[in-house]
Image (cartoon, rainbow, N blue to C red; front, side, top):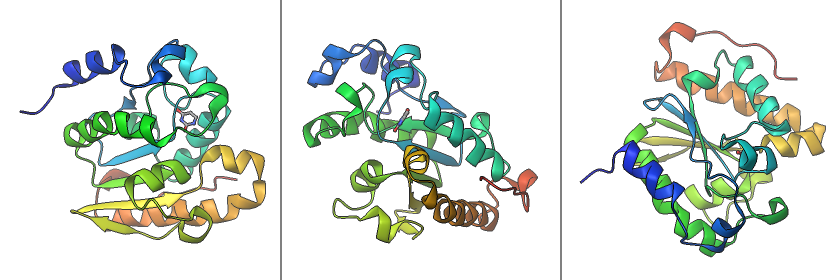
Length: 198
Ligand code: URA
């Protein structure tokens, strides 16, 4: 039987499946349109997300908002979540066991939201959802279709803050995302809209 949002939220909030739970202030489940055709998946909560319980609210989140605006979208029209729901210490990359324990929650989020398109923000979600061997620098911007769902790996917004030379490629990926949303008529009221993320 399908888990409800209420059951999922209470399971995540009480979760002690991996050691990340010991260091958290808040779990960060996700937010946005619970029936969005587009899901954005990041790596895991950082400091601001841990403090607030909301995904992508720090510096990377502010850039993500601009990236969404550049393709005519905002947070209320997408669903944003992460591979792991608790902050890894010093924002390190989550370990395979931590991701494995948390994947069950992400799978339940897929079942509940039923997105048609998934944007993988950075290496961690791209490895977890597309291919464990993926090289984000080589394979970003290449669509992968799995069981009727389109996956697009791209850079994590934090990577664009550290290395602004990646912004050009990131913008190419955003345009591909916008084109796919238009092709599939997923946001008919936004068709043809775009700006510039830089
Ligand atoms: N980075 C992520 O991957 N996720 C967040 O929620 C915030 C920063």
